[in-house]
Length: 272
Image (cartoon, rainbow, N blue to C red; front, side, top):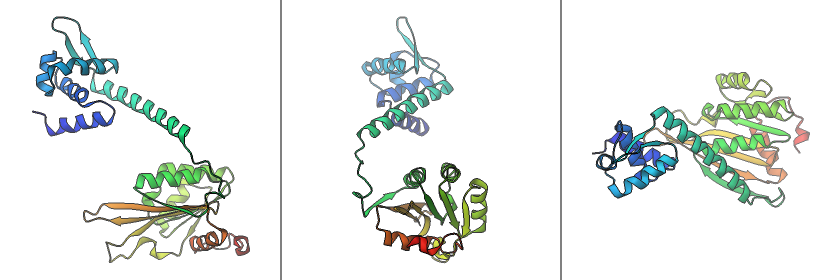
């Protein structure tokens, strides 16, 4: 009988690229010091005829050792070794996927061709990745207003500091002094200011109300706005809208809103 923890391990192994029988056989061999095909079949609840095929695949991946004999005996490599092997294979597949997706990417339009596009995306990880991509691609200016410190990941801090030190104007606003101090510590080259947008954090008495996660504008052409909404279980769901190629008039309005609380850093005439 497969335990709950073993079932979870089997599921994770499948997510890392193993097929069902391969994952079950490997998990079974992790429980056993070694095993014959029959013993693996009984432990893993895998048909004996399929055990040989699964074990050969596991051997080719470097996860299982075989001792010749009659019958053959099999054993899994140590857990620490297996984690290293799987991590290396997973990383390699991610690199291959990255290259393949870049090879087929079709977004080659110019900024003029992408005018007034608006898209939505969901999930903190996806939103953080989009924010970091926008900052990394900035040429002239990054304008960020932080509603929740949770959006300030180490990777985003690093991208902001790199942009600031390579000549891009980086302006970051936050309502809370603790957040501003954290930003100054991590991004000393940025211009940090107190925003006057108290509504960023949402009403304190209405827990079901959404709060702002991040407002980001890059080079006065791209905008990302995210909101964080609590669920019944108090888990936060983050959603965002992303816009690219807006006309100058809308960017002026957005920038003036974002810069509320920022004093004497830009001549208003520059924003016209």
